Length: 114
Image (cartoon, rainbow, N blue to C red; front, side, top):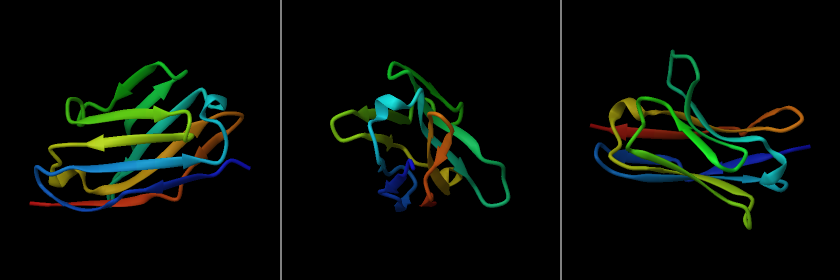
């Protein structure tokens, strides 16, 4: 059973930074896609950033140029560096991985105050 455990959420001021990490229970090489989604209160879950086949990255339009996704195969982790945070980045952030199935972490809250 694949487990994804997020860490690093919390409270930040607008313009500040946070770093999220997601530890996978197995090798991240088993996943064709790994990354992050988010869901704000009352809104649909949306793409934040994904890494495909360990090489290709894509970002949601609202975070391009501010967020950076990275992977660490030695730690079986995927991280999200979030800079220049905005109040509209407030959401629950979910780690996601696609292997034999789609897997989700439990989510971590990020709150950005103005």
